[in-house]
Length: 219
Length: 188
Image (cartoon, rainbow over all chains, first blue to last red; front, side):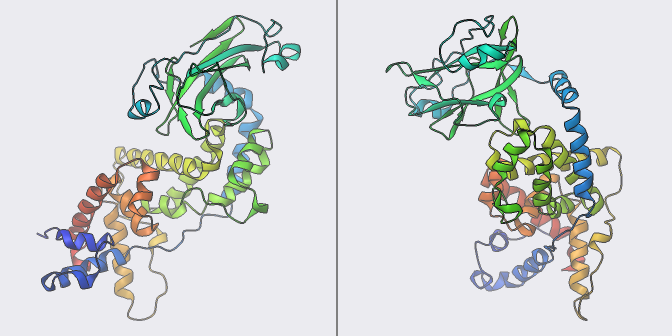
């Protein structure tokens, strides 16, 4: 039965040691190990030239049925949970997650009087609803909200500080439907809304969720 | 492997293309297809042990990325996001094949011996044996070997794309070395 490689030989394979740095009794084992990893095929792999056209044919079909796609998205079962979590960086940020709230000024159709950036939505978009985002982030220099409603643009929807309280707010007119979002602190740090349900985005991160209806918003 | 801007397609960055597609210019998605179709082909091929299966995986990943493009939180990191989709697809395909108990011993023509000068036959045999041996590792062990020794990534870079810690990656790799030595003993 073959035994495993000596730890020093493994460090050789990891690139942390050179063959010359191995003791003489491990030289042979090291050479054998290098033959093993040297057999790794690093040649490029070319796929069929037709792949691009196949992908684009499907993409065009899906784009043409975007309505169906939205319906499928809304009907796809997802894990949704509501919880507050304290992470180490929240302490570092000055109890960032201590008191955040998403206050929804919902149930208010677009024509309702409302100052702020949602004003443009009043005149034309009857299916838009004003949603107010609030985050307590005393250590932040800039806060924005990015989500599916603004193509995750980190600069499209900045929040304004409410005095020196550490509370940041903004009001957006969102179309009816379900939206995923997250707050962006200082242009780089993504933070889920501690006061809203969150879903796994399928790639190891979490997004907050708000469902907007003509009768109001639901977390 | 992640976040590289290529000097093709009129210098448009991934983020610019993603935003154009989301704004309705569906045809621009072909730029991303051309940019990444072969870039991740080797990873998928080595993970799945077959170029044909890898091609299906890459195609599915590209379509799935389009369908979920609105969820791409950081368009400038589209490459890494697409890689995660492809990685999930490769893992799912492996699980599916294991359920079907399909033999993974045979690899397809992708790994057939290329023309080499006389005397290199042994190396070709060893490369073929290694590719077969890789299919007997756990998916996690195989992935770290592929990313480090075939894609040329450092442990820190692998940690960045997989979410695993460097320590756990090294542990997987070291177990992979031992297992490969055992599987390859007649070729070393």
